Structures are given as C-alpha cells and as structure tokens.
Image 1 (cartoon, rainbow, N blue to C red):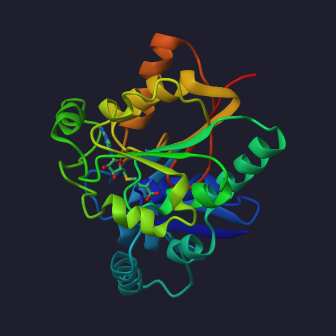
Image 2 (image 1 turned 180 degrees about the vertical axis):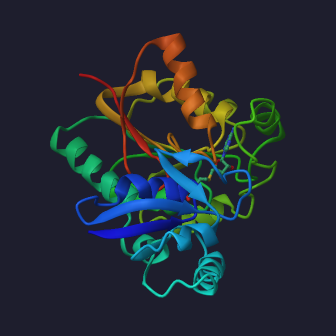
Length: 285
Ligand SMILES: C[S@@+](CC[C@H](N)C(=O)[O-])C[C@H]1O[C@@H](n2cnc3c(N)ncnc32)[C@H](O)[C@@H]1O
C-alpha cells in the first residue's frame, strides 16, 4: 500500500479525499499553504504545511489544485522540501475524466427510456458549456436558458455576502452573450433564451413542464428561486442536476436546498462524488 499526501486542502483536495481508492493508497496528510487551514483535520487527516507534510515521507503526492501555475508551484515547493517520489496531478485526471457530463448522459438515457415528458432547462448558462450538451442530448425538445448574460446581480451578491456563502462578486461571469451561446448550440432553434434576472425572467413560463434541469447559478438566492420555480414543474421521474451542492466555495447551494426542504418538505437528493460536489434531485413518480 502506498502512503499518499494530498497537496491542496481546498475544494478539490477534499473531493479527492473521497475519490482515492483506499485499497491502494493510505492518505497520511494534507499539505496546504493557507495558515487558516494549518492544524485542522479533514476527516481525521491532519492539514500540515507543505514542508511538514513532505517530512512525513509519503511514497506519493497528489497535487490537487486547479490551474497549471499553482500546480507547478506546489510541485516545486515539494521538491524543494526534499520530495523525490511519485507525483500524481489532479489536473491530468480533470482533463481525462468528466464525471458530471457522464452523469448527465446517463440521466438523459434514463429520461428517454422512461419517456419522461417535458422541456429541458438551465438556470446559469454562462458561455453555454452545459447548455450545448443538453441541446445535443435532447435535439427534439425545447431548451429554456435563463441567465442575466451580465454575470451575478448586485441584489443576489448582497444576500450572498450577508450570508457569508461565498466570495462571489457582482458582474462575475459577464464575458458572454446570448449570441455566443446560440452560436455554440448544435440545435439552436430549440433554444428559448430568457435573458435577465431570475426569477423575474421566468414570468410567463408558469405553464412549462420540465424533464431535466441544470441548476448552476452558484449563489443562494437564485438557486432557491430555481428550486421554487423548477421543482413543482418537473414531470414525475424528472431530474435536476444541481451544481455545487457540496462545494465549500459556494455554500449557498446547500443552504438553498435546506431552505427549500424546510418550506416544501424533503427532496429525493443524491450527492455525487465529482470534484464540484454536484447532486441529483429526482421528482418521485
Ligand atoms: C457558473 S456560471 C454557469 C456555468 C454554466 N452552467 C456552464 O456550463 O458553463 C453561473 C451563471 O449563473 C448566472 N446567474 C446567477 N444568478 C442569476 C440570476 N439571479 N439570474 C440569472 N442568471 C444568474 C450568472 O450570470 C452565471 O452566468
């Protein structure tokens, strides 16, 4: 059995903790440069400085941060601290495997096999990465796309900040447009673009039923508004792919689910083990 140190105790490092196959690797420590994490424990595994983590003489290190530059800097730091063993890069796995998209395909298969009726929707479109996949998976269904296309609104950010859910900023994700998204969709004629602040942008769409929804607005207020709009309009057997449910960078998603369950009763929710903490919500038959 190889002993392993995970370098990076943020969202990705923590997600890796659950993904590591403990038949082959024994995790002995996290190493992180953030002084606020130092001395804490994640699932009983200590978070040490990078140097102290390397001093525990692991066989392997897993560099679990996003971005080539941060990844290279941690590798350099580990080598400076004397590490000469095997190095694994989360970056490589992220490029190779896309758990969230794979789950989306399986969800689509299930919805089609069960002939679950309804449109497809997404709240939080940005540049249309997921919207393109939804459109390709359901070429014959309307695709309702909700976004400000101007990034996060001041109103949502005010609530986000008051609740200390994240460090999101007004206007983040504004480098997009409806035209850009439409140009990337394989079947753009199915798209119904609703530009503007959600839930106002859903006005007039009270009659629509949905089979599948991607809820990816990052923040507490729009996610709660999304659950209030979409869940009652899901067909029986319909599903919501909720991004960030177990994401410490965007704690609003989890809080929005808690708030919705408090007002409307428990949801059938399955947390996934992808890096972003996605969850699937299913409407019972
Ligand atoms: C993480 S991005 C979405 C990423 C996208 N799903 C993808 O696959 O690339 C979050 C998006 O939610 C949108 N958003 C957040 N709050 C919103 C609101 N109240 N109304 C409309 N759009 C909102 C932002 O404008 C942003 O584009």
